[in-house]
Image (cartoon, rainbow, N blue to C red; front, side, top):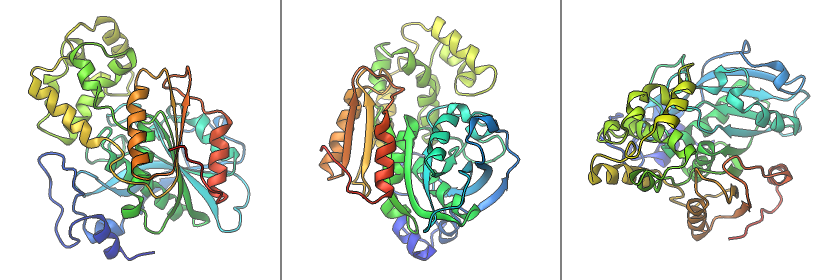
Length: 393
């Protein structure tokens, strides 16, 4: 493993510079101190006394929740992030048990939205169980800003560096908890998690030292949602996009103080903004009310400048921006009305242009909740087996 100092140089501008806050998001990598780089993945606290429903996971599997150190992709400061490690029963194979880092989809962007604080992982228990049944350990991150037990920066929804760093550092944390885990790992995720997993792969060359990424599997990945702002100006958002739009706006404002949510959310969206981005008992009724009461113009920006500013910020978030060293499986639905297939296809075309090894799979008739069938199982197994990865670029 490279030293912390070398890792820091690979990450950023200078290891000796102090971390400073920024006024607005920069596409340049933030400065990270050597101490912060060295602490990535270290465990702050952990417990096997979890809220998970044992019946939701394979018999004999173990679960540990933990808080670990990661890095803000916005400021470079050290952060604390919650997560969980799931390990199937049985002895690990020679060379250590392979790890899948699972990145969850959108649940909300407020404190208390962490899936690891719920019995069913906010709906991800089935995905985790699938991976456990195939012998993989699962490192699961809640992402920065979603835990109710961690103080720190808010959740920078869809900001890719922070999400990617959180995913990678969840593997470091998992290996600190269980040294029998292999350095070989795969990133996987859906929707927001698809973007986070892709980011982990794209930044692996500068952030993944000490680990061996074998592949990235993404389903309906939110690689570039910047066109949603134009739809908001014409009040043509789909129902699913309407539900996400307050999170998109408020999440961008967490990162960029020049974005004022009141310029973008009007009427019921402004009145119920806090509930619409949260995961508490008031969130579901607020979403129902918003769907019923939304008026034409409620998502129209107060000025073209405000709309352009939000679009520009989301374009800064878009992926890919560079090549990924590990192969990629990208599955998306032709009927996805949240992350439009044309947006995904444009992003995947850029990946092919960078020379990535990408298997692009369009599922005809499927929407945002895409089902890849047996393809996902086989593709993941083949990556850990070291077989050549297919590509249709």
